[in-house]
Length: 355
Length: 276
Image (cartoon, rainbow over all chains, first blue to last red; front, top):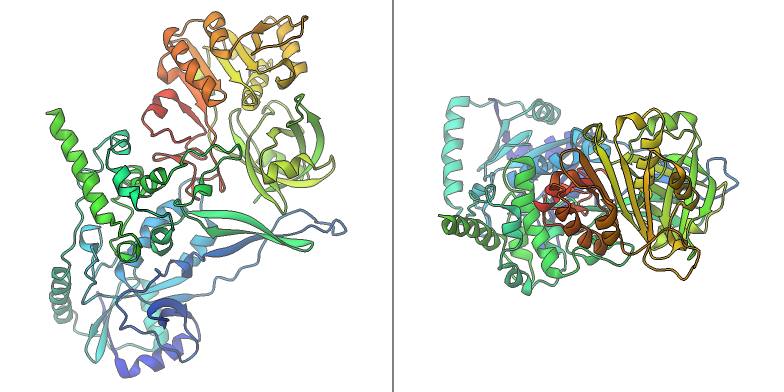
């Protein structure tokens, strides 16, 4: 495994070179927090930020995205016929993506890239993107990545993992895409692999040891869906929820979307927009019937989806990477770690009763 | 991406005029081949500028040259569709979802139980089974179909035609009528099922589609008649957008109604939270 040293005084010139071939995205200050934005020429990503308010999912999966166009003008030969929109998927790179947000793409990919159907928009954007990760040295106190199948140095989905080492970044090359990225920047100084890896391992362990928050998920798979669905704690869990949808909006693994037509005079487009299981309209039938007509139904759907349905459907663990955003930003302090504990221990209690 | 279609023919099906059947012809003849479907599947009807609605396919794979859908007027898209005219251009995306288990039902008796306007994919199924090429593959076919009044029954002319045949046992019923000449059954679907349906067992499948209340009261009857839950086949509806298992709203537990369904056995449904 190759490790390349990037001197911080060569950071800016490297990024300028990269901007010639890549659209660069990185965390930048916005109000009193940070978000991933496309970087202007000469603008530098602010890598001091611990975690952005929103996950960078919108770089690959925009909050609103036009799929088709049409004309409603009957004088046009092809009126009322939908046409693909011409889209460019030029190479782009997310600089400073945290390992949890990168791992989230692996979870989301299972939804958008299935044996039967492939989402062309998500996949093309995904393939065009180079993920330049930044290892977390001092995780937030609400992070629980290490027990959510992830970690502060987790490499899954990343093309490069950068480690802050004082005056330098060390970039661990994970894929060919990452190698190409480094070459385009002109960063070629290779480090002694053995020595560097040893140091990285020590830093990794130090970072992991700072994560004190955990979730236990071992019983979720084996517990019967309907037992968890009918568990008594949902009333209490959902009591304070105001169905604002913040949790789904900030979540790197939430992918639900809506499809809407928008008309401008005699033309228009069919677009898809992020949607949320927190909203009653999400499941309302035309008849007025709604299978999830109470907030209890909707809160339960969110947690059951992440911690049970997803676990059962794909058998790759929970649909959560432990970034902690929903925990930090929920206005009524609903905490997925606590709900996970309720679900997991409910399972254990149910087992005990059977014996 | 929806296939462009032209509305070829519109039929008003019910006396309240809330149900209309739309027959579509593909603008590009090769699209008809690509839209190769089985009875029980659905499609997204795309009204350009308004949106899409998931609707069961009412025509049968054995009918060529068109596809047919019966639509209830309830929301934005369906109301707009009801105001459209023959010759108008729109789109059809699909076919989507799974279908009734035709291979498993070969050599078996098939009992179709339908109520109200949930008879569309059942019509598709009947036409498919009655096709001379397919009829020998199935044993006895029973159809129990009910609506509130005679005027609310879909596909009236076809129902009467099937009544006359001897290779299908029709049991048409209405909840009530003041028509003194009504010569078919009167009573709710579960009651008529109890009276007319053959007993269950290894050789008989029931396809059940209808409003929740009908399903609720039909299930005990089928239990009584000894239908096992893996031979009770149901087709579900939920709000949908993508129709391909990605947009996240139509799930019942881990199953997507659009992709893993809409057809499930009662045995499968019993394992889900049944959020439909």
